[in-house]
Image (spheres, one colour):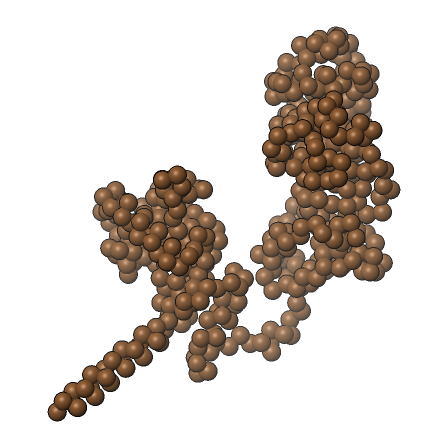
Length: 469
């Protein structure tokens, strides 16, 4: 009888172990207000809807900084993490439904709508969070530390998913853990009959090391299945002679491209050349193709009321005065705006920061032409209060008569019309942009400081931003 009992016990234990080993779970960690966090959740949610043998276990990501709960997206994200934990502990079967509802109500108090949708009393939920906020967040932090995560991610049966954030890639990873009978079909043969979109990144010798990863990732968000090939422009053939800058992102005109990038194409972000669409990332570094290199020439493109442009001007002027950059470098300033003439010849301007800005642009162009020796002094004075319309005091401080500028303002406007043609011809729309040696275009003072000869620009912490029209 004893042997029978032992046999039954071991059989029962083996059954439990088998059940445990067959446990199939997708564990998701999300930053509640991060788009990538929601991508992971929706991939997992779609997978468990497809495969009933899998369950989903969702946890919020939290962190502590200087002894306090911290999120780069603020207290709203921390509070949402606490709500997720409260639902998880008290109404766990309703968590997925709540998260689906929350994705459709992403505004600050959208959690109330999501709670109602999930069948959770929002007042009770609020009280639960207020009462147990610390313990809820600590429980989440404990789980984060156990799995060593600090950003949105997913684990499939305990193994971290490192593939692309698209449904087929995610399901293919899950497929590896399924039996032959359970495996999903991805119609590989049929899918191979469709033409794969090719993204060519054309680079030159000088631009081959420029960072193209971020832009490539953006393209793959729109067309995840695309193949990416980086190629030397000189070996690409005459059919790409239209390329003006490198890196150039080139796509063949086909249905998938037209549909996936319709808005960007309609907005004029792509140039069309025959059967190709080409995109240039003008918020990054570019080399002008076939440009004649002019060593020691620096063209600066700014908006006179852009804080980043002003900082760049001040840094360059101070660097020239303190001789931290080569005094032989010839600096020319160009303005980013647009000009139009009507049928009668009347000239009008448009600038990002309004009428006061283009008028200041015109004054600066006039001063640079008529009083070149006083131009830097005027800029340093004017830039102390660049966002205000008052400019006469700055002119007077460098001994320029404001009345002369006002009297000759029509000439100043004509000078500005001519000046802004250079930025327009190069498609420059971000202040500050720098054209170095007439061949290399970089955006932001921080990028300029990375180039030989400009490393010692006096700027403190070089700002990374810019004003873009």
